[in-house]
Image 1: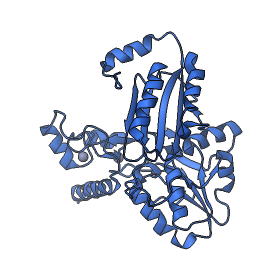
Image 2 (image 1 turned 180 degrees about the vertical axis):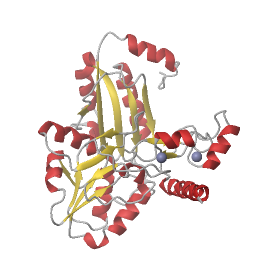
Image 3 (image 1 turned 30 degrees about the vertical axis):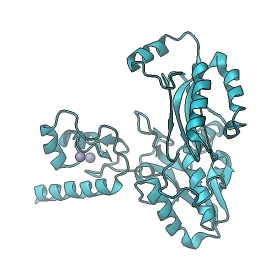
Image 4 (image 1 turned 180 degrees about the horizontal axis):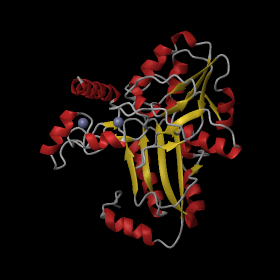
Length: 345
Ligand SMILES: [Zn+2]
Ligand SMILES: [Zn+2]
């Protein structure tokens, strides 16, 4: 049996649009050691392909992270497949709120070295010994309380546009750096109640286990991340303690939680929370740019890139978003500022 789907994506998308049944969009993850990630991957591929499930699923020796859509008429059968595997038994499933059921058009299951890259050797710490999970409302109650420390476990380009009030937001470009920085920043706070959060919760699973390994005792994490917090706050009609935009990995690159703009254009400094990719194909830096600067620099991050862009209109270099470059964009900001000063003098 072929365990990969190689049909043309346009054909698959068309087929998805023409489906006459509906799909449920769900997500779940769990850290759980697998002896044979590839074997497990092939098994679930067979099970879920047979049920016409679509999605993007990652499997590693340390666990599984899945976002998928399941045909409604197969949903009970799908739930039964979960009972076959220890790692999937009773796994908490999150159901998408705004569900068109059209988020995926094929089934992709990949084996990766890690679910979340931490740069550490396997077995350095026990990834299954996690902190205490707090619901959105429990977390809300604790933010700002005495003897608590709120820590943003996301990268700087994420926390820059939105974060919890008073949170520690390290200037990290990767999760690996984030772990190191947080451990340093919290060195004298081992007796405090640590409140970790990230976008959807998966990074905190790892971060909380790491901090426990480092000797922190009262480690807590926001279950379901900012996404779930925003939902619960809205339902309970409470004022959000998360201010600004929640960065998410889709076309919109973020969703405002309380309507406030807390960040600035990296080029002119005016209030702005819109990320963009440098239009120079050999750069593709992710940075914050206001509409005026977008026009002035032709969508580029520096004058150098504006000039270089003219010469490379064909797509070369990295085509995917280049995340994690906060140092580079602060440097690019400095370059542009210097140029403006020269212009003004
Ligand atoms: Zn600007
Ligand atoms: Zn650039």
